[in-house]
Image (cartoon, rainbow, N blue to C red):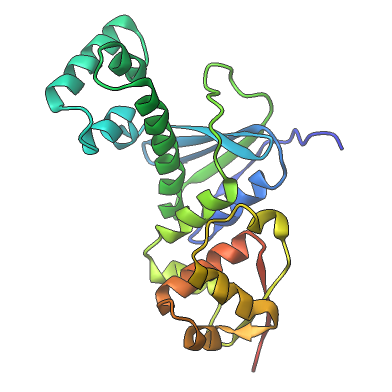
Length: 242
């Protein structure tokens, strides 16, 4: 099947982002998904359906912040590295390694954390615009990190605290949920034993109110998990009883 070449763009709403990201990833395409709001723009670089890199113009997403907040680099060392990276026109992470402030393996872990944080931060967005452009990635941006698309979506939704958004996504107490048997997704998904147990209760159509009664997980976490499982296509809504 020929690769999709049409640029897709639109406006975000309170619940569209998780589904939007998954719809792009499950196509197994290569391209760049960019989201913009006010003065902030963030982009996810996707290769064959997997997130491999992300960029952001938000100062809080910079690699230096990762190491500084983790206590790996002191403030004075960070400022010196910033000055040198600008002077030498090199990436800050590379400069931190060259100056001996971090080790090469620290840089790999830091970039991984940075990319995850950028992607997961997008799940907080309820307003803005998105643009997906399929096609080869800019070679200077591709670092090819091994990131799990399904686990990123799970983590992103787990960071959402807005009950209004979650309630809108799951539909109500009497909505019944049933598993779909998507083994290709479930094989790499990182769920706790309690979460797998909850999923097993959905082998038959089960209303949300019953899932809340039988699970040891707190109800808020159950609702958020169901939103993630719905997004990933691992469960589906069956019916609403009148």
